Image (cartoon, rainbow, N blue to C red):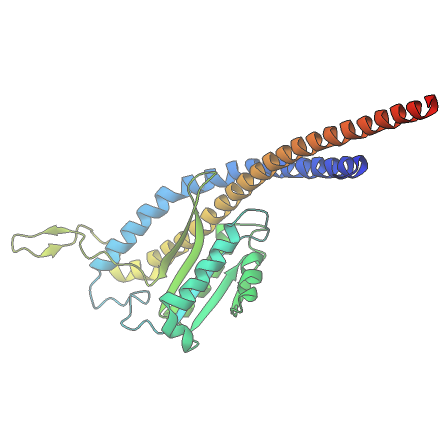
Length: 297
């Protein structure tokens, strides 16, 4: 059994750690409220806009050029891994890295063998995690969270959209944690480009053919040029907001568990301290009694 001084030192150390984890939990809880409000307000708008975007894309005439439409070949792939810049949030970051690795080794295995898959990392932990697995990061964005705004995220989205429009990539996949609640984050990988098309929208005419339920104003060409790119930027911004809220939820949960574990460890250490102290007192009494008996004899 460790001596009393070692146990006291250990208790003091764990108490100090407990104070830090408790403070981090409260800070994450405060940040979570703001991030949660942002994604809850954004999500219904973004989801509905995505639904309209999908339906409108399916109703565009074949003579209207949509540079974000689906292509026959899925040859060049871009994967965008979204994590945080900081750790201490459980498996939040490592899950994204692991899913990205799985996409490279399973889903896009053939393209990966031909070195036709690029990876963009958003967040420092994505860069570090991917490099540790031997995955080459084509580009990274580490400062985006310092002053997160739609304008800053739009620049990244526009760069990705331009690469797709120019034919650099045929498919773009997002990998991130989707916020559900403070304790649960859903790891998702979803298609960003090409635009998913819903061809079942509309009503049937008397001849049984599908007719569009949309009246296009302004022209369809103007919709392609302006509305579709703006909608894609909003979808990208929603993914970032989801990730930010999920990060704070994951960190708050991790720090809550760490604080509870520290409390249990302190309780066990105090129990061991009391046992050691009792054993020390008992030994001292035995030594006194033995000494007294020796003097009598």
